[in-house]
Length: 171
Ligand SMILES: [Zn+2]
Image 1 (cartoon, rainbow, N blue to C red):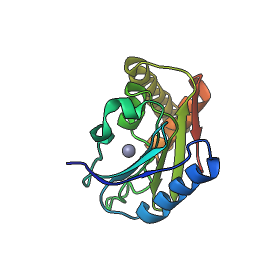
Image 2: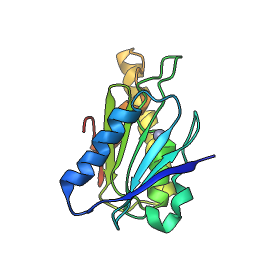
Image 3: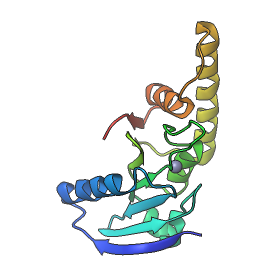
Image 4: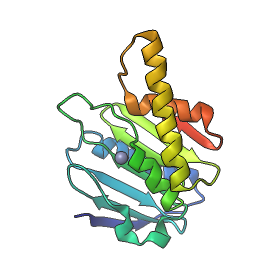
């Protein structure tokens, strides 16, 4: 179960304060073995949340608070080799469902971000993701190569093919 572990306030119009929140979170939780998230809401309220090994649920702060909110969460390093996974399909669908702002993820040295600058429904993103996976499999099949970072490779395809979706490899 997700718990709120701290609440603070910043000036949301001050980019330096927003960046500081993101940087502090990244440094503190990049190696964490359970998932945490920080939600920076449009009114300047900043919530830090603690989840479990596989997820953290930001809806605990109330779904109206999530609209437009900037979020950052960590993915615990996986000993089975997917330490460098990027955003999951669920991460994208969650962002659409609650109309969130820019999203960030950290996992060891990985620091990715994405944002929607155009509104999409969950169904549209579900199918866009599925098509991107199909494109990715075809590309690797033709090149006789293996998919190494499936999520990141899909996000790069979506960045190129889906209007209003921006993926950032580093923040
Ligand atoms: Zn995630």
